[in-house]
Image (cartoon, rainbow, N blue to C red; front, top):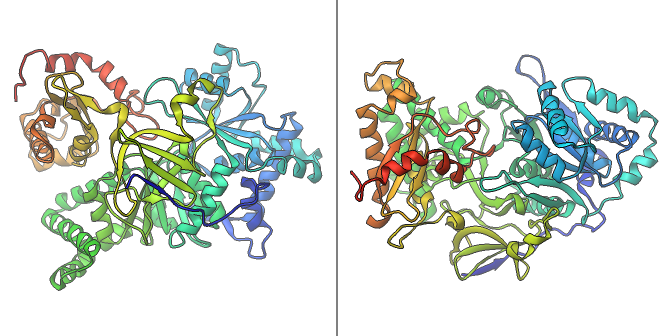
Amino acid sequence: MQELAVPPMVDTPPQSNITDLLLRHARSAANPPLLVKPGPNGSWIDISAAEFAADAAALAKGFIASGIEPGARIGLMARTRYEWTLVDFAIWFAGCVTVPVYETSSPSQVAWILGDSHAVAAVVEAPRHESVVRQAAHQEGLEKITDIWQMDGNGLDALRKAGASISDEVLEERRSSTNMDSLATIIYTSGTTGRPKGCELTHSNFVALSENAAAALPECVYPGASTIMFLPLAHVFARYISVLSVAAGVRVAHTADVKNLLPDLQSFQPNFILAVPRVFEKVYNSSMLKAEDGGKGKIFHAGADVAIAFSRAEAAGKIPLALKLKHKLFDVLLYSKIRTAMGGKVVHAVSGGAPLGERLGHFFHGIGLTILEGYGLTETTAPITVNTPTHLKIGTVGRPLPGNAVKIADDGEILAKGFCVMRGYYNRPDLEAETFVDGWFRTGDIGELDEEGFLRITGRKKEIIVTASGKNVIPAMLEDQIRADSLVSQCVVVGDARPFIAALITLDVDALPGWLARHQLPAETTIAQAAELSQVHEAISALVEKANTTVSRAEAIKEFRIVPTDFTEDSGHLTPSLKIKRAQVLKDYDAIIQEIYSGSKPRA
């Protein structure tokens, strides 16, 4: 199959906008709780749809009273928290456009995003964020930014107070001035290559996609379901799920610190979660390490094998009786404990941002947590395709959502069309020709559609390595397998225009202490010291050897180097959504790469 279009399940009136999704619940007799704020001692406080809408309206009146015109851009820089979503809706109630900024952004990045988008004001979380915005405004001469309101100070109260003089009629005129074709947000790409570009996403992108996703996923997103948001809301994935949750009537909690995620999961007990694959890798690895440290490693590994076998057998349509009995036993010994650690009620999880890996997908499905892997980009409002409970094929990223279409170009590139696709890059008409071809958006990813219309991602067009002998190598095929081990944090495969394939590998700082203890090595060993240990090299070598069995000899990793420091967002090698900035890694570790290829042949 080369092309598949799925017709819409829901048609939305053209005069609608995102705020209508909220008001539909706020004006209903049920008036359900849609948002949840953290309370004292790990408790949670429900905020009804009407209460949330009234507060968003009060803040919107404050924007209007401050002289902010319809369609103006307002920057939003904060960690994932209740007030992020509140301000986002307030901006839309005021008929304005939200420009999200990652709270970890540097002054130069903030200056570029706010300057390029022509933002006139900003809402930030704390004094440090306001300092960054003011520094950026001073350095780059952003005269248009006249107001900065702070969540942790009295900024939101000041907005509410300022808006007291604005009538409901004026607010309604502003709110209803936007429609499906109106610009809702400008989200800047996370910048794995080059300077971030502003993706223009309309109210239609969010509303039509949310309405149709809710119709396609009734088992996951439904009135009364709940989720906890911990990914950055500045990223399109979390932002879209946030709007989808409002559309479907889902209760949403927020947690800003991932270190508190497990306690928050256990106290809030969501029905579904969303995460990037690295989170699921961490859950798997931490469960395994805990079992091994407690002398129950054999039970974990046996249970993991049974879970994977059970999931594969279920997909094949026949589960042998002996496997059913083993699965029931391990559900008591292992699976129920992992589910309890994640809150006890999580049945589905949505994964995106990077490939999950078939083994991990089968493991979680086998323990009773179905991961619905999807695929999309900032330019496509997140999901183009997604697996659903009724249309699930682990190892793929699902079929197109209703209203979306996928096409495979002659060179294997994935093309997309439909509700999800942005209207263009802000202020960059010069990119139109290379971004779209015959009305199809060019994703830059390589993939294939199977006979049932399920999409499988095989690589990134710009990241395909072509060796000196002309062999095409997809780095993700090897990287995902090596990174899945608990000892490894990151893996970057190199070899473009080189005689053979090699890899840069970093160690996981959280997993290292347990690994050292199990190998009777000093607990005080640092990451840099561990990178030099023969035992570590032997372990990594075994991982590389195992990964090499899945590819041809020409694609196999011939040499690797263990880098003494990790690739992180702080080091500049990961985006806020945890994607590798490959070009930056290659630049910063050029000396190590040159050393690898200094001889004519690999050493090992």
